[in-house]
Image (cartoon, rainbow, N blue to C red; front, side, top):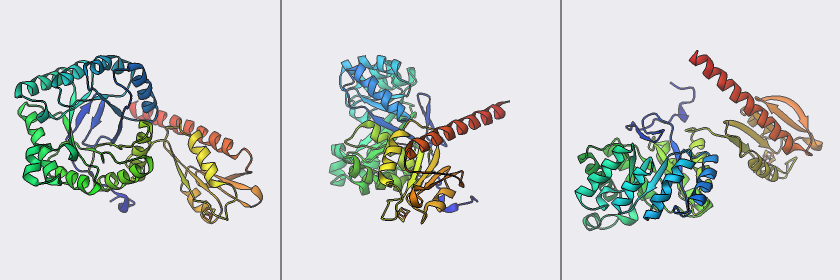
Amino acid sequence: MSVRPYRDIIRRKSRQISVGNVLVGGDAPITVQTMTNTLTSDPVATIKQIHAIEEAGADMVRVSCPDEASTKALKEIVRETTIPIIADIHFHYRRGIEAAEAGASCLRINPGNIGSADRVREVVRAAVDNNCSMRIGVNAGSLEKELLDKYGEPCPEAMVESGLNHARILEDNDFTNFKISVKASDVFLSVAAYQGLAEACDYPLHLGITEAGGLTSGTVKSSIGLGMLLWSGIGDTLRVSLSADPVEEVKVGYEILKGLGLRRRGVTIISCPSCARQAFPVIRTVEKLEERLEHISTPMTLSIIGCVVNGPGEARETDIGLTGGGKGNHMVYLSGVTDHKIDTDGMVDHIVELVEKKAEELEAAEKSELLEASS
Ligand code: SF4
């Protein structure tokens, strides 16, 4: 029995696969991925974007391979980046083979869409020979005609059936190193499809609400859909689809996982909305701190609260706390305990210094724990 059972999430038991050196499924951490929007045939631009994506903490990244120039560039992209690359393939089985040979760690491909059994066999052989996994990606907007005829419209049952049909083709080729997604832009449809698929198989599931919208609306929609699924234990990896910079997708993905206690990364800021009682400009301070603390990946908590109404209570639960006080005297808490007072001038610089110092301490403690455990 855990101390706070109301926070427990019991994950669906999925089988585990490897996407390069990243494990997906089983008890592996739920991973965050995104997709580049540069031309893959332009390796310089794509590598630059992947570096920004890596910096933001993504566990893997998908790149489109619509033509031969893209799969040709893939080799260089794989060589110059660290995180596993997933090649997005539609219809062209040759691109799948080329991508696997170029070092992709996963092919996003629907075997039912690439033609004859021989072609499927060739792609599977290339995947096996190159230690490459796959993702079957069912999308409500591109369901097979037979399923639309059978069900009348895109519905959860049709999406599950589509996923299982593609899965069977790979199973018939003795290939099970894959995950499945059943995405729709409609939250209800997507969630019901994932719930159905979670019941029907034990393959790891890649979650996403497709074409979710812009930064704000897409974040809200994704948080509802992915939040609902993750909370009920469904999902092994995820992509938040936003009409925005891929780095934003990574940030939102992490925030969803952090909100549910499923991953921890970087500084989690707890801050009040501010009101007439604020003793310093809370909104501006939090904006500046978010920007200045982006480089910290060590998990820790920081509370920035405008006044004593909620400040001391929040500070008790966070690694570093700041509570606005009268006459510009704000209280700084370290590990939940009152430590010293500061005034508004230089407040942001001071908090950044404290966070950086705390991150160093936490990293050093983690390293010595690891050393102790290995000796
Ligand atoms: S903590 Fe204080 S400043 Fe912040 S919203 Fe509440 S009452 Fe207002």
